[in-house]
Amino acid sequence: MAEEKVGPRSRRERPAKAALSRAGIVATAVGLVQAEGLARVTMRRLAQELDTGAASLYVYVRNTDELHAAVLEELLGAVDLSPVTAKGDWRDRLERVLTSYAEVLFAYPGLAQSAMVARPSGEHYLKLIEALLALLDEGDVPKGQAGWGIDILLGFATASAAEHSAPDPRTKKTVAPGEEWAALANVIRNVSAESYPQLAAHGTDLLAGPGKARLAWGFRVLINGVLSTPLPEGEAK
Image (tube, rainbow, N blue to C red; front, top):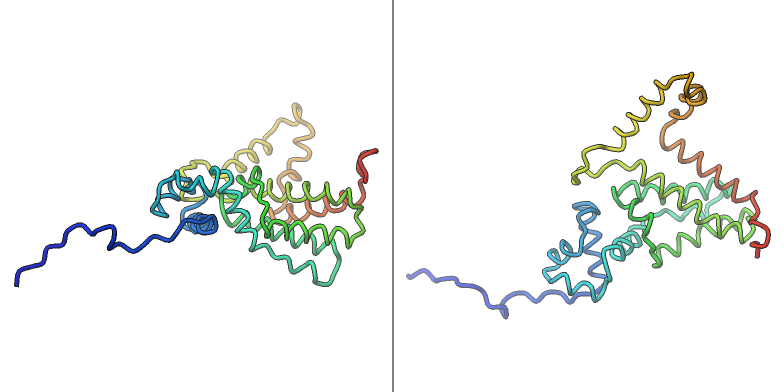
């Protein structure tokens, strides 16, 4: 029997591609973040994964920044909001929610840097803000201070994750944050007490403590500050 020749498949014989949608694009982007890291999630790479042209994606997502904001919004669904309805001191429960938020950023190298400028506005982000405001309200924090305090609390958590997240091994970054910190620590330990008396006196304190303890302490400082610091005169509502 003669061997049947196999030629190029007709487009009509190929499985139909799923129709593009914003939800599908974001879901694919999240999968790429988990598999390849945020740095690889570009419009071109995403179009390749979806077997389409990059121009087709701009109908649903304006640019890479908006795409990263949408990815952040999706991943915020992993933040643990259960402390809101738990028992215990409201400060401790607020700290637990903020820590969970920071842990999401730590889990995805590069996401924290994106979160510094990303502006998610979806359901997960709104639920996070609602939870934080509910706990501040439970602590009788005035509304104005609570509103301004949210920005400070989330900003501190985001900045801490951006500064201390482990580098993504899939990127080409040659110097890890840990190496940079070690170099700085070495300089501080060896400063001249004559030229830098305060640095020499406080060097050990500047470098002491594990990251988690410093993060938790920072949250407590900010929470107590939000509670006790009124807005500038004329700004309170």
